[in-house]
Image 1 (cartoon, rainbow, N blue to C red):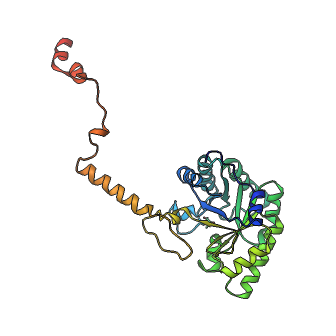
Image 2: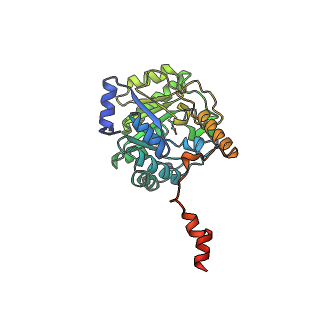
Length: 289
Ligand code: KIV
C-alpha cells in the first residue's frame, strides 16, 4: 500500500494500550499478499494452514520448512509494507537449539519474514527466549494448536473448565516472560481469552477466541470462501464467495470455448494486409520457382 509503513512490535504494544484492535489475515502467495496489503491489514500470517487450504493436506503436520520458506518469500514480495509473521512448521523447533535457530534463520533470511510464530506454552518458553535474544520477534500460539492435533484428540474448544483456564493463563504468562511480542489464542472460550488478554502487557490475537482479544486473525480462504467445499465454522465470518465466482467463471469459459464463442473478434490480432498472399499465395509461389 503506497505510503504505508509496516507495523512493528513496539507499535503493536502501543495499539493494545490504546485499545486499537489489530487486524491480521493469512496469505500464502504473491496475489493474496498484494490484496491483503491493499486492503490495509495490520499483519499478515504465512500460516502453516497452507497445508490445508493450499496444499490439500488434512492437517498441518506434513508442511515442511521448505514449504514455509517458499510461500513466505512469495508473500514478502507481494506485501513489502506489511509486518509478516511466518509459522515454524511441525517439529522444526523441538530438537536441538542449533537446529531450531537454523530453521528460524531460513524463515527470516530466505522467507523474508519479520517474525516467526510457534505453537506451544511453557514447554517452549526457553526456546523462545533464545530466539528472541538472537533478535527475532516471536508470536506465541496457545489454545488449540493444530500441530498437536493427534495429542489433543481433535479440534476442540480450549479453556472450558477451571484447570484448562489456569493452564492457558500460565502458558500465556510463560510466553510473555520469554519475550514473545504477542500470542495467538485459538479456539479459546471468550471469558478465558478476555481474562488472559487483560492480564498481559503484550497483545493477544484471537481466532475463535471471542471479542476480548486485542486483535483478530482469520484464514484468507475462510474469509473469502475460497474453496470448492466451504464448511461453515462458528468462529468465522465470510465476507465473500470467491469459490463460487471462480467456479462460475471457469464454467462460462469452458462453455464458450466449446461453443467457439471465445476467442471473439476483439481478442485476436491481425497481420498486415496480404501477408499470407505474399508469403504463400499463388503469385509468390510462381515467382519463387
Ligand atoms: O496456520 C494458521 O493459519 C494459524 C492461524 C489459524 C492462527 O496458525
